[in-house]
Image (cartoon, rainbow, N blue to C red; front, side, top):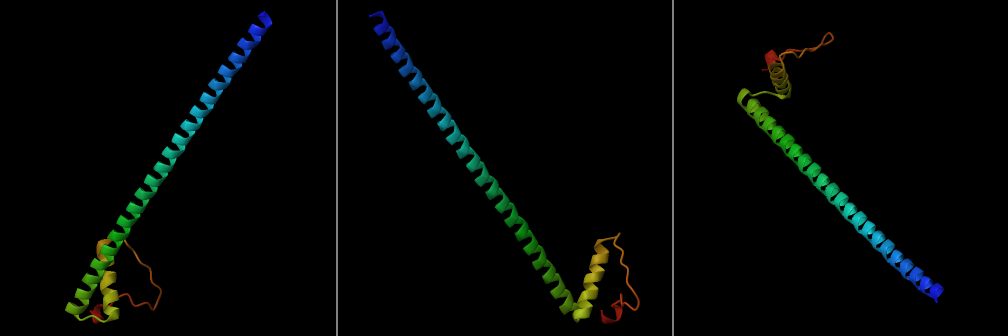
Length: 117
């Protein structure tokens, strides 16, 4: 009878131990699923931030080019410049914006467009 009772207690202990292990496994699974969800949400957020920043940079570049086109068009019309004159105008603007800019040209390069302006 004592052995029977001990066996029943052993079975009950093993069933309890199994339930504890199942609960631990389910908890670990839930934690892993939550971590995976957090990682995915962070990845989506990081991707959205990257896309937003790229769009802003693209919009800024587009706006800058549009403004440059507008200035060059106005300069061409106001100063009645041909294509060479526009290039000269652009070179003068570049040199004007960059005080430390230097250029080297080989002979017989034409670096002045004075007559065309």
